[in-house]
Length: 277
Image 1 (cartoon, rainbow, N blue to C red):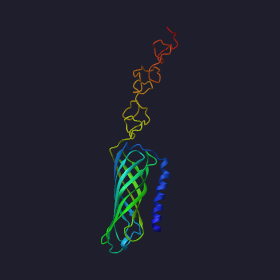
Image 2 (tube, rainbow, N blue to C red; image 1 turned 30 degrees about the vertical axis):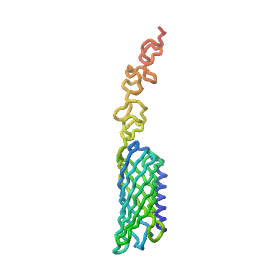
Image 3 (cartoon, helix red, strand yellow; image 1 turned 135 degrees about the horizontal axis):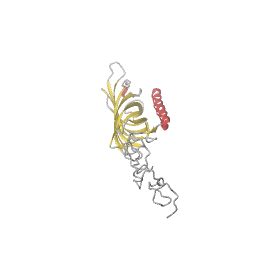
Image 4 (tube, one colour; image 1 turned 60 degrees about the horizontal axis):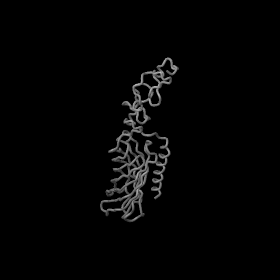
Protein backbone atom coordinates (compact mmCIF):
# COMPACT_ATOMS: atom_id res chain seq x y z
CA UNK A 1 0.00 0.00 0.00
CA UNK A 2 2.92 2.36 0.74
CA UNK A 3 4.32 1.79 -2.77
CA UNK A 4 0.87 2.56 -4.23
CA UNK A 5 0.71 5.86 -2.37
CA UNK A 6 4.17 6.77 -3.65
CA UNK A 7 3.14 6.10 -7.27
CA UNK A 8 0.02 8.17 -6.75
CA UNK A 9 2.03 11.08 -5.33
CA UNK A 10 4.50 10.91 -8.22
CA UNK A 11 1.65 11.09 -10.75
CA UNK A 12 0.14 14.12 -9.04
CA UNK A 13 3.53 15.84 -8.74
CA UNK A 14 4.20 15.43 -12.46
CA UNK A 15 0.75 16.81 -13.34
CA UNK A 16 1.21 19.77 -10.97
CA UNK A 17 4.63 20.62 -12.48
CA UNK A 18 3.15 20.54 -15.98
CA UNK A 19 0.28 22.78 -14.89
CA UNK A 20 2.70 25.39 -13.53
CA UNK A 21 4.68 25.45 -16.77
CA UNK A 22 1.75 25.78 -19.16
CA UNK A 23 0.53 29.37 -18.59
CA UNK A 24 3.73 30.64 -20.24
CA UNK A 25 3.13 28.54 -23.34
CA UNK A 26 2.13 30.18 -26.60
CA UNK A 27 -1.06 29.82 -28.66
CA UNK A 28 -0.76 27.03 -31.20
CA UNK A 29 0.05 27.85 -34.83
CA UNK A 30 -1.17 24.44 -35.98
CA UNK A 31 -4.21 22.66 -34.65
CA UNK A 32 -7.72 21.79 -35.84
CA UNK A 33 -10.45 24.38 -35.34
CA UNK A 34 -14.06 23.76 -34.37
CA UNK A 35 -15.74 20.53 -33.25
CA UNK A 36 -13.89 17.42 -34.38
CA UNK A 37 -13.16 13.77 -33.61
CA UNK A 38 -9.81 12.35 -32.56
CA UNK A 39 -8.34 8.85 -32.70
CA UNK A 40 -5.31 8.16 -30.48
CA UNK A 41 -3.53 4.79 -30.27
CA UNK A 42 -1.15 4.79 -27.29
CA UNK A 43 1.50 2.54 -25.74
CA UNK A 44 3.45 2.69 -22.51
CA UNK A 45 3.92 0.95 -19.20
CA UNK A 46 1.62 -0.24 -16.40
CA UNK A 47 2.71 -0.20 -12.75
CA UNK A 48 0.44 -2.78 -11.13
CA UNK A 49 -0.71 -2.61 -7.53
CA UNK A 50 1.41 -5.08 -5.57
CA UNK A 51 -1.57 -5.83 -3.32
CA UNK A 52 -3.66 -7.02 -6.30
CA UNK A 53 -3.75 -10.72 -5.34
CA UNK A 54 -7.39 -11.90 -5.31
CA UNK A 55 -7.79 -15.66 -4.82
CA UNK A 56 -4.21 -15.62 -3.44
CA UNK A 57 -2.58 -15.36 -6.86
CA UNK A 58 1.07 -14.35 -6.82
CA UNK A 59 2.13 -10.73 -7.21
CA UNK A 60 1.91 -9.63 -10.87
CA UNK A 61 4.74 -8.11 -12.88
CA UNK A 62 4.60 -4.56 -14.22
CA UNK A 63 4.42 -4.73 -18.00
CA UNK A 64 3.61 -3.18 -21.37
CA UNK A 65 0.45 -1.08 -21.75
CA UNK A 66 -1.47 -0.85 -25.04
CA UNK A 67 -4.56 1.29 -25.47
CA UNK A 68 -6.71 3.50 -27.67
CA UNK A 69 -8.82 6.65 -27.26
CA UNK A 70 -11.68 7.78 -29.51
CA UNK A 71 -13.02 11.19 -28.62
CA UNK A 72 -15.22 14.10 -29.63
CA UNK A 73 -13.93 17.60 -28.84
CA UNK A 74 -16.58 20.30 -28.87
CA UNK A 75 -14.14 23.21 -28.56
CA UNK A 76 -10.67 24.13 -27.27
CA UNK A 77 -11.61 23.51 -23.62
CA UNK A 78 -13.26 20.11 -23.29
CA UNK A 79 -14.04 16.78 -24.90
CA UNK A 80 -15.28 13.27 -24.15
CA UNK A 81 -13.55 10.00 -25.00
CA UNK A 82 -14.19 6.29 -25.13
CA UNK A 83 -11.06 4.67 -23.73
CA UNK A 84 -9.58 1.24 -23.29
CA UNK A 85 -6.30 -0.33 -22.24
CA UNK A 86 -4.69 -3.77 -22.14
CA UNK A 87 -1.77 -5.11 -20.08
CA UNK A 88 -0.40 -8.64 -20.63
CA UNK A 89 1.49 -9.84 -17.55
CA UNK A 90 2.27 -12.87 -15.41
CA UNK A 91 2.84 -13.91 -11.82
CA UNK A 92 6.19 -12.73 -10.55
CA UNK A 93 7.49 -16.19 -9.61
CA UNK A 94 9.30 -18.93 -11.45
CA UNK A 95 6.79 -20.72 -13.70
CA UNK A 96 4.13 -18.08 -12.90
CA UNK A 97 0.85 -18.15 -14.77
CA UNK A 98 0.00 -15.68 -17.53
CA UNK A 99 -2.44 -12.91 -16.70
CA UNK A 100 -4.30 -10.09 -18.44
CA UNK A 101 -5.63 -6.81 -17.10
CA UNK A 102 -8.08 -4.74 -19.18
CA UNK A 103 -9.91 -1.48 -18.47
CA UNK A 104 -12.56 0.26 -20.60
CA UNK A 105 -15.02 3.11 -20.24
CA UNK A 106 -15.46 6.83 -20.88
CA UNK A 107 -13.59 9.97 -19.79
CA UNK A 108 -14.16 13.71 -19.63
CA UNK A 109 -11.11 15.77 -20.67
CA UNK A 110 -10.69 19.42 -19.65
CA UNK A 111 -8.08 21.76 -21.17
CA UNK A 112 -7.76 24.65 -18.67
CA UNK A 113 -5.54 26.75 -20.96
CA UNK A 114 -7.54 26.32 -24.17
CA UNK A 115 -5.49 26.82 -27.34
CA UNK A 116 -2.16 27.31 -25.57
CA UNK A 117 0.35 24.64 -26.48
CA UNK A 118 1.36 22.11 -25.35
CA UNK A 119 -2.27 21.48 -24.41
CA UNK A 120 -2.27 20.39 -20.77
CA UNK A 121 -5.39 18.42 -19.83
CA UNK A 122 -7.03 16.75 -16.86
CA UNK A 123 -9.08 13.59 -17.26
CA UNK A 124 -11.57 11.68 -15.14
CA UNK A 125 -14.01 8.90 -15.89
CA UNK A 126 -15.05 5.35 -15.21
CA UNK A 127 -16.24 2.06 -16.63
CA UNK A 128 -15.28 -1.54 -16.16
CA UNK A 129 -12.16 -3.66 -15.63
CA UNK A 130 -11.28 -7.30 -15.55
CA UNK A 131 -8.35 -9.37 -14.37
CA UNK A 132 -7.83 -12.85 -15.75
CA UNK A 133 -5.19 -15.34 -14.57
CA UNK A 134 -4.91 -18.69 -16.38
CA UNK A 135 -6.37 -21.14 -13.87
CA UNK A 136 -8.34 -18.69 -11.70
CA UNK A 137 -11.82 -17.27 -12.24
CA UNK A 138 -12.01 -14.03 -14.24
CA UNK A 139 -12.61 -11.01 -11.99
CA UNK A 140 -15.02 -8.46 -13.51
CA UNK A 141 -15.27 -5.17 -11.59
CA UNK A 142 -16.03 -1.51 -12.00
CA UNK A 143 -13.31 1.13 -12.15
CA UNK A 144 -12.82 4.87 -11.93
CA UNK A 145 -9.76 6.60 -13.33
CA UNK A 146 -8.25 10.05 -13.25
CA UNK A 147 -5.04 11.62 -14.44
CA UNK A 148 -3.38 14.31 -16.52
CA UNK A 149 -1.37 14.74 -19.69
CA UNK A 150 -0.62 16.99 -22.61
CA UNK A 151 -1.36 17.04 -26.33
CA UNK A 152 0.87 19.10 -28.65
CA UNK A 153 -0.12 19.62 -32.30
CA UNK A 154 2.52 19.05 -34.97
CA UNK A 155 0.13 19.84 -37.85
CA UNK A 156 -3.59 20.57 -38.17
CA UNK A 157 -4.18 16.80 -38.17
CA UNK A 158 -1.46 15.11 -36.06
CA UNK A 159 -0.55 15.71 -32.39
CA UNK A 160 1.77 14.07 -29.87
CA UNK A 161 -0.08 12.91 -26.77
CA UNK A 162 1.37 11.78 -23.40
CA UNK A 163 -0.72 10.93 -20.34
CA UNK A 164 -0.67 9.26 -16.96
CA UNK A 165 -3.72 7.78 -15.26
CA UNK A 166 -4.56 5.95 -12.06
CA UNK A 167 -7.04 3.16 -12.79
CA UNK A 168 -8.77 2.44 -9.47
CA UNK A 169 -10.38 -0.98 -9.89
CA UNK A 170 -12.70 -2.72 -7.46
CA UNK A 171 -11.93 -6.13 -6.04
CA UNK A 172 -14.16 -9.08 -6.85
CA UNK A 173 -12.04 -11.49 -4.78
CA UNK A 174 -10.01 -11.56 -1.61
CA UNK A 175 -7.82 -8.73 -0.37
CA UNK A 176 -8.29 -4.92 -0.30
CA UNK A 177 -11.53 -3.34 -1.55
CA UNK A 178 -9.84 -1.70 -4.52
CA UNK A 179 -6.51 -1.50 -6.35
CA UNK A 180 -4.50 1.38 -7.87
CA UNK A 181 -2.90 0.55 -11.22
CA UNK A 182 -0.94 3.42 -12.80
CA UNK A 183 -0.63 3.54 -16.60
CA UNK A 184 1.76 5.98 -18.32
CA UNK A 185 1.41 6.06 -22.10
CA UNK A 186 2.01 8.13 -25.21
CA UNK A 187 1.28 8.11 -28.90
CA UNK A 188 -0.13 10.14 -31.77
CA UNK A 189 -3.58 11.72 -31.91
CA UNK A 190 -5.26 12.10 -35.31
CA UNK A 191 -7.93 14.77 -35.85
CA UNK A 192 -10.91 13.89 -38.04
CA UNK A 193 -13.41 16.44 -39.34
CA UNK A 194 -11.75 19.61 -38.03
CA UNK A 195 -10.62 22.60 -40.08
CA UNK A 196 -7.23 24.35 -39.90
CA UNK A 197 -7.04 27.07 -37.25
CA UNK A 198 -7.48 30.56 -38.79
CA UNK A 199 -7.58 33.09 -35.95
CA UNK A 200 -8.02 36.24 -38.04
CA UNK A 201 -10.49 34.64 -40.48
CA UNK A 202 -8.63 35.67 -43.64
CA UNK A 203 -8.74 32.21 -45.22
CA UNK A 204 -5.05 31.45 -44.61
CA UNK A 205 -4.38 28.91 -41.79
CA UNK A 206 -2.40 30.21 -38.81
CA UNK A 207 0.53 27.89 -39.59
CA UNK A 208 1.00 29.66 -42.99
CA UNK A 209 -0.19 33.15 -42.02
CA UNK A 210 2.69 35.65 -41.88
CA UNK A 211 0.31 38.48 -40.88
CA UNK A 212 -1.89 36.85 -38.21
CA UNK A 213 -3.81 39.99 -37.19
CA UNK A 214 -5.34 41.03 -40.53
CA UNK A 215 -8.46 43.24 -40.07
CA UNK A 216 -11.74 41.51 -40.90
CA UNK A 217 -12.73 42.03 -44.54
CA UNK A 218 -9.28 42.90 -45.88
CA UNK A 219 -8.09 41.01 -48.96
CA UNK A 220 -4.85 39.03 -48.46
CA UNK A 221 -2.18 37.32 -50.54
CA UNK A 222 -1.09 33.68 -50.26
CA UNK A 223 0.97 34.42 -47.13
CA UNK A 224 -2.01 35.98 -45.34
CA UNK A 225 -0.76 39.57 -45.61
CA UNK A 226 -3.18 42.36 -46.66
CA UNK A 227 -2.91 43.78 -50.19
CA UNK A 228 -3.18 47.45 -51.18
CA UNK A 229 -3.27 47.73 -54.99
CA UNK A 230 -3.46 51.54 -55.17
CA UNK A 231 -0.90 52.07 -52.38
CA UNK A 232 -3.05 54.51 -50.43
CA UNK A 233 -2.58 52.76 -47.06
CA UNK A 234 -6.13 51.34 -46.94
CA UNK A 235 -6.26 47.59 -47.55
CA UNK A 236 -8.10 46.11 -50.53
CA UNK A 237 -11.48 44.84 -49.45
CA UNK A 238 -11.84 47.78 -47.05
CA UNK A 239 -10.95 50.47 -49.63
CA UNK A 240 -14.13 52.10 -50.95
CA UNK A 241 -12.16 53.98 -53.63
CA UNK A 242 -9.76 51.26 -54.88
CA UNK A 243 -8.30 53.20 -57.83
CA UNK A 244 -6.92 56.25 -56.02
CA UNK A 245 -4.08 57.91 -58.00
CA UNK A 246 -0.62 57.38 -56.53
CA UNK A 247 0.33 60.11 -54.09
CA UNK A 248 -3.19 61.32 -53.32
CA UNK A 249 -4.15 61.63 -49.67
CA UNK A 250 -7.18 59.60 -48.58
CA UNK A 251 -9.62 59.35 -45.68
CA UNK A 252 -10.20 56.25 -43.52
CA UNK A 253 -12.36 54.73 -46.28
CA UNK A 254 -9.59 55.08 -48.87
CA UNK A 255 -11.26 57.92 -50.79
CA UNK A 256 -9.16 60.93 -51.95
CA UNK A 257 -9.35 64.29 -50.13
CA UNK A 258 -9.66 67.71 -51.77
CA UNK A 259 -9.55 70.32 -49.02
CA UNK A 260 -9.81 73.39 -51.29
CA UNK A 261 -12.41 71.85 -53.58
CA UNK A 262 -10.57 72.67 -56.77
CA UNK A 263 -10.91 69.16 -58.21
CA UNK A 264 -7.25 68.23 -57.66
CA UNK A 265 -6.70 65.71 -54.87
CA UNK A 266 -4.67 66.65 -51.81
CA UNK A 267 -1.15 65.28 -52.13
CA UNK A 268 -1.20 66.01 -55.87
CA UNK A 269 -2.39 69.62 -55.56
CA UNK A 270 0.58 71.98 -55.85
CA UNK A 271 -1.57 74.95 -54.80
CA UNK A 272 -3.51 73.43 -51.86
CA UNK A 273 -5.02 76.71 -50.69
CA UNK A 274 -6.77 77.84 -53.87
CA UNK A 275 -9.66 80.21 -53.07
CA UNK A 276 -13.09 78.69 -53.56
CA UNK A 277 -14.30 79.15 -57.10
